[in-house]
Image 1 (spheres, rainbow, N blue to C red):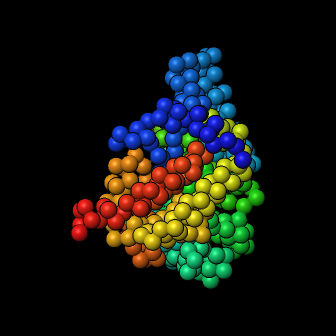
Image 2: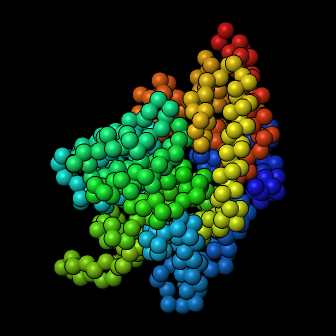
Length: 410
């Protein structure tokens, strides 16, 4: 594995010892948004400072330079997820945008009354709300793949839920609360024997595990830049070329068409440009490309190993305490927990007092309480820059839970 203390020097917020509430920042909210390394900041500033023209439009050298950087970022991201060709990657504003594009651009035109869309109770709102609306508009039916007693979604559970009416399965590869990895490759290979399209929410998986869309035979994959060291407001939707050819653009405008006339006859550009109407988030794209290069230089296998080590250490430390409940000890992603008898957002305020950033609440997974039995949790999440010292600081505040109760409630 890499030297985490050397890696932290690449992140200005950590190198500059940013403080929160007067205490040194301990950042344990990376599943929500990651910190940014200097190379990403430099890539964005370089575009804004040295070649800040538009993309795919100009007939002059500066604009050509923009095109090279913009398409270079697309190629880097192709490599990052091992897509067959870079034109299968559409720049979006993030996972939410990408999943909406699939739901409305593909689902709305391919589903009919009685067709089934399979989800799970652990899905983020971005992977439920668009499908709810599409189901209402088409008459399709939402069904849920059951989560087993350990919190996992298994291939057997998928097989038991699929019927002859199932047309789309849409799942997060790694869920944002429970943190369990879905066997997306097994599911996709099985689904394709039934003619079912598989949509993957990669918001939590792409930053934290090796992604290979060809090996897993994924049909659509959406992910966000800000969760993998990139800027906010940028993301990617991957789709197999044949499916993208069938998908209807949900936005129209400049850059998406080759020509049109006053009678309303429109000729769209080739993929992916027909889906990228308007001026794109150029600085976001080049920043995301820089983030992907940074992660590839670290080695995603090393990123996985580091996170696994940090999570294992955190669970070991939490098991020393008798005043916490951990809901996903055996998962791979974020830790979902509560300090006993302390409301999650009160606990987050307690952590904040000591400079520790965690997430608290429902985490946009508002039907998961059916499984957890609680409607909110504290979520601690790790990334390439997390250290054992960060976790130790977190544990020390957990120990103060009883003092918090005594001071405010007893």
